[in-house]
Amino acid sequence: MSEQLVPTPGQTIGPFYGYALPYEGGEHLVDRSDPRAVRLHGTVYDGHGEPIPDSMLEIWQADADGTVSQEPGSLLRDGYTFTGFGRVAVDNAGHYDFTTVNPGASEAGKAPFIAMTVFARGLLNRLFTRIYLPEDGEALARDPLLASLPEGRRETLIAEREPDGSLRFDLRLQGDGETVFLSYPNHRPGDPA
Amino acid sequence: MAGPVVSSDAAADSQAKISADIEEISRDYAASGAVETQPRIDYAPYRSSILRHPTKDLHHADPETIELWAPAFGQRDVHALESDLTIQGGGEPIGERMTVRGRVLDGDGRPVRHQLVEIWQANAAGRYIHKRDQHPAPIDPNFTGVGRCLTGADGSYSFTTIKPGPYPWKNHHNAWRPAHIHFSLFGTDFTQRMITQMYFPGDPLFDLDPIYQAIVDPQARERLVATYDHDTSAHEWSLGYVWDIVLTGSHRTPTEEDTDV
Image (tube, rainbow over all chains, first blue to last red; front, side):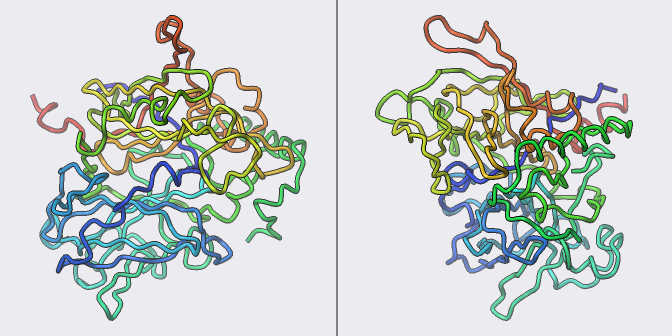
């Protein structure tokens, strides 16, 4: 057994990341003209239900057939390669848009989801969550994470399919309908985030 | 829920009030006997955190499929020159030239290889290139404050830049951030993703700053302070700082095959 090192603490992204982190094409995992293209969008809200205008979101997901990409090129997209990673800063109304594909199940029978990290001014450490697709009711019912959540909180992780095929996923950092945020076993127990 | 909430830009409170709140939380933490290694996300002295932290506990998840992998970045994404923040303009930026270097490790001490590191910072006068930063300090036409690199096979990174200045903000009256460089990091699985800030040794603003103090454990927050390293300093050229970063342990570790001997 190797000795565990203590992880470096996180800090807030602050307000001034705009020139540094978002990049051209960051929100387009595929081109809008791709026949598989799906819009994933929503709004980030604070504890008073007000939109947060200075938040940055990242998604990381499998391809439509469930393949996890290990191809580089997320920062300088070639327009052909699916890298699975996207980054976007919300607009002045707290709204974000990604263009992506519906992730496929990476293992048979598992409910596919998109992994998401949330950063914001005022948020002292990043938050993790999952965005599940709403369609496969049986797989959702079997999903161990969803099953471990109380009724009423489960649906905060399931995107809504809009009539035009878009996925709608709002984030509520606090208060009514607060989104479920996740910790993983490698995050130290007892730590607040 | 919380009572009346003061706008985070109101700068209504004094430093004395903020410092007293910091001190009280610090005393309670010391008395609790607990050991925390990460910042509190509910930390009222940082006013804009009040409405922006979840009030429910983070929910335990066993990482699955996509979470056990991280995006891959390569030479396509990052040019080698992007690690030098002093050559992005038509001339030399003003300020104290320096090198910041270190290694990115996972919680088991393994190097995080060929992974993306992004930084951003204020210029020597404490000014960011950002429309929201309007405080009366000069913009440096030769300095964007933005850099990137990929770690080496040993997890090492290195940036050439200038030392950022402290700058005022509106958390409370006469609030100043200690000088810092923002770091954005990826590991080998997505659950290791983090953003943090690196500080400089001996900064007189540490005790006054609610963002730094939101890491209530004194040893933990010192992990964000770089070390001055004279061997990294270069004769008649630049000063050197070393700062190593430890991500949370990977879940996708050398597994059964390694131990099953």
